[in-house]
Image (cartoon, rainbow, N blue to C red; front, side, top):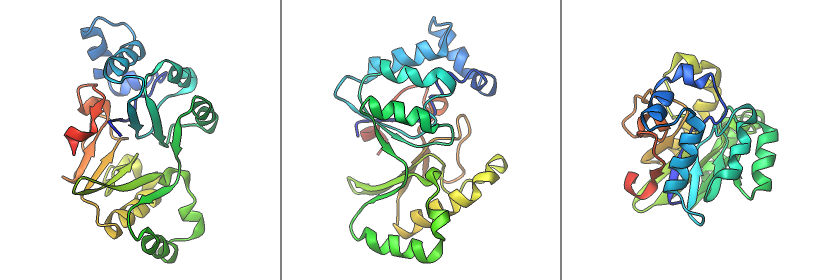
Length: 211
C-alpha cells in the first residue's frame, strides 16, 4: 500500500455538525461542499495505479456513489458505517474488501488457534473485527477501523470487538496500530496512529512516511 486514510464519510451531512472543521477547511480552500473538496484532494494525491488502504467509514447514504470518481487501486477495511449494499457496489468497481481478521504474518495459525480457544465462534465472526496484521520494514503493524485499547465511553457498544482486537495486537506482538474511527480525538496509546482526516490536515497519508 502506498496511501492510507479513514473516515471520509462521503454523503454524511451530520458529520459536518460533529466535526465542524470539515466544512471550515473546505471553505478555506474555496469549496462549498466538503465532498467535492475531498474528491479533489484525493485525486490530486492518488494517481490511477496507486494502492490505497481505507480504514473504514467510506460513505453514508448516497455518498457511496462517489467511489466512482476516485483514483487508485482501493482496498476498504470495513468500518461501522460501511453498509452491505455499499460494499457490493465497491466490489463491482474492483475494490478489494477486508471484512475479517487477516493475519499476513509467519506462524499465523498459532494465533488463530489461540483466538479459537479464547473466544467463541460467534465473537470471531463479527464483520467489524476486520483487521490486517502484517510486517512492514522492521515493524509489525495492525490496521483496523477501531483503535486498540479504546477508552472512549461512547464506544462501549463496541467493547467486545475491541477486546478481540486487543488480544490480536498482543498475541501478534504488534508495534503500531493504524486506525480510524476517532476523527478529531486521539487514542490514548502512543503506538496508536490515527489516519482520520481531521488529525492529518485532511490529507491522504503516505504510508511510507508514517512507518
